[in-house]
Image (cartoon, rainbow, N blue to C red; front, side, top):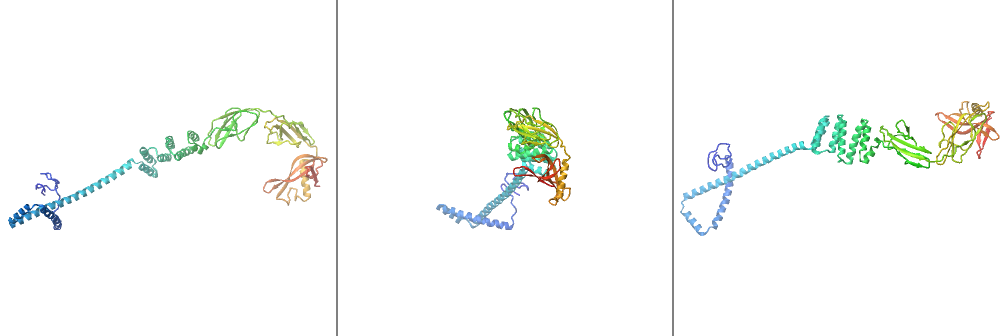
Length: 511
């Protein structure tokens, strides 16, 4: 191969001439078809060049034209043919050079395109590599994939990389806490979530989810005191209210401390389910103290109320205290006209001194109050041993001193209560109201039974045992009927007890 510039022979494979430094044109050998194609192109170019030359000749002055004509006329025919051949060779060489330069540009374009594609692919590869290395999303995806395989430690390592790239994204925090929980590192899970809360960059929904996850871990481990402590530092009232059941707020009193001229029904309340323990002497309450179940009745005197609340999770509140001075005048105690003792005849118990309040009483020895029986008139002394207690309660709710009486009433008669009941059953059986002496009847499903109520004195008729009638159903339920019976205490005569329109008692004999 020779250099097209200086003609120096070049070694095969060189791109530049070693002598003149010109770039070597890589031109393939011509084949007939290619040479024909080149010839057609060159002919076209030659025609264009000849056209241009003709235009140039038209602009030459007349002298030059005449001179050229003289020269052409004087030239011999062989010289003219040789000149034409030289001109054709020159034009052919120039056109060949133009064709090769055009092909060379095509080669350069192809090389540039290939270079562009290579560079683009390299850029894509680098971009993907950088994405894998510096993208938090990629690290999170890898963490999820590791977690699906059960490799939570590897998943946590990927999340640590994601945290370095993106910071404490809540998605990363939640995943990391969950993975720590899966491998039993519950405290680390809690620490991750608490750190996220303290950063104060969470939305309300994310903050609530963080608390839910922490409390779920604490609840599983029964760390209820830790839950209460965690919520005590929470500044979001909605979240605190949502988890209020884990908290133990100090009990609230219905009355403020102070002096009062009336009886106080002191109510205490707590924020959630649990128990309130209290004392009235100012001592510290605990689980051994009285349990609050109903408002405290504070009458005359001084009270130092202390209370503590313990919720259903065993979390205790602070102890709260309040002082009350109740300044009231107690009413006069009731006046019982009958003395304690033994009695052998029916006797009525009368009470006076009800002007300053209402009298209440009990018959079993317990202290009376507003829920006890109210005295409205003389009371028939019951058979056997009885222990009465009476108290007067003013309109302000102040109670007087309690007055006690004990009676032992034994009736001197051969007719006992049991005999009186038997006499009623016998009479009803004789009248075919009962089908047997066990109390069965065609009127009901079950049987009739009779119970002693009291002894009454019916004016002009004497003393009588009063019996009430009940039905014991097949279902085991005892129901009281409207019928009552009266049996004379000394003769044992059975009667139906009735009342007229004025409420006066009357008798219908069953004999």
